[in-house]
Picture (cartoon, each protein chain N blue to C red):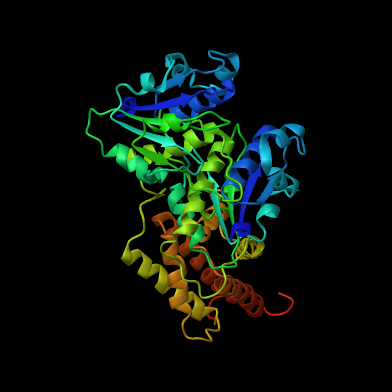
Length: 242
Length: 242
């Protein structure tokens, strides 16, 4: 399971923090680190702060988009300390760790962390099944990036030793790339039926709604089948040449 | 209670770590820091790493002996990652936090941390009621001093406040009758587009899928709007009388 939990850092600006994150991860038996657009990496300061966890750093992958970091992930928890609008499931680190530990054996999970300065952008949240807020002093909530990773990784380490309740999946949980295809298909059909998106945020809302539900692969296929049926019927009804 | 839990660092050698400890403490609403024989304190690096927690640093007291740091403490938990001889009660961070939280209202507790290099000396342990070992990767147990403080302070914060996870709703959660209307509408549109329900369990699946997501009222309205658009378009395309 250790290699099935990924830590993803989006836009990390300080290489020292990347090193500290690697150290925090290895202490909690995590090894899969993905960096989205790091400002400076590789960097000697990262190596210095990784202490003995330079193997985690050496194996880290660099990608250009959050979607690329999550393409094979079936569950994504996004760390955020900011208040957020919209309907969101907020979990404590302990609850999120329990959710990860409850995934089927082969499912990959990711913990997503934003930049030191701004945290996760709203568009990054669109990939998350659940948001995690670390309980902290309301008068001073200023956890360092590596500290946040440490706390979540610690809860994960504990949760794996003592797994609690679980979601029973009929089919494997859908992975990021499958979900992206579903959402693209949905957007296409909504355009086709000329659904009026008054706010401009329709797809974001729908993503949040479906992400909360943690779709399995069968469910994605059923939803795509329905979408195809909606387009197909329209075309069939119109008839050729319409 | 916040001011009744003290963090004691014995022989800390890096001033940066003292700053990071202050930051970790303040994030978890702790304010009482005592330093036993710090090598360099005060120090600009401590201030730099304390970020906004310089008030904790400024209030820190420096003493010469562990006994002086603990003179008014009713309960002392010592952090150690090394195996120890002799009879000792080892607690997890969570158990130690629960023990602290269970103390009588006016009792002061301390968490005792050793030097970065050697940890607590055997003579320091003589002041402890319980030893705390942070669960970690047996193959790489190398937690930074400030990380250790962070994890214990976090458990303590949770033991005292423990806000549980929750779903943040943008609109009131949808009620049963609204969901039944949604599901009836969905079933109707699926019939209309003649979606092939091979298994006969399509609606049950879709209900489970949406129920897991805990829809709010806006989301129900959006989904019903989409369903209406699907039917409406079909009717419009067919034309009147079709």
